[in-house]
Image 1 (tube, rainbow, N blue to C red):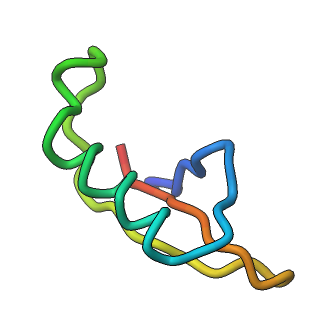
Image 2: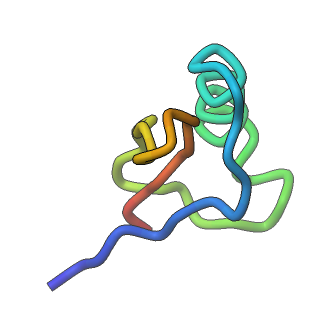
Length: 55
């Protein structure tokens, strides 16, 4: 079973988290990561936004 990997930072707006998603989708190879299978923005219980992905 594959588990979600959570990015270590939460953002105040969905837009900020969305920018990270775009960067991960387009620039994953620059940072030496493997291309994630799926990336999504989620909302924490406190109302902030984060990014999680399936490696």
